[in-house]
Image (cartoon, rainbow, N blue to C red; front, side, top):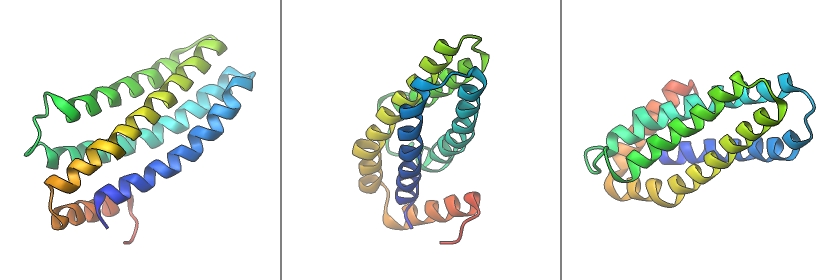
Length: 147
């Protein structure tokens, strides 16, 4: 399996979580609940971003300048999402916590769209199938799944 397929599959799982949270967060009446949802999302997104950074982005650096262009944007957005989720855990106000979590989700959705429409397409053009599959095996080993 290509690493791009694996990462795309992870996006599908996140979309279900995002849908659930976007539907329920506006009605949440408990700061602890909102922070808990954010903490769960943080744990999952952090490992996903790490996989992208350590596998796909590093492989693409031989073809794309990491300081400019798509890789720089992707890393900047990872930092923005992470920052919103960190501030969420520091929030003392329910409304602020809701806004931070919803902002992180909206940013992640837009980020995923860029990956799916631009970065993954570039990866398939710039990296050969053997490399993408080798990175897919590294992804599977890190995730402890059999492919």
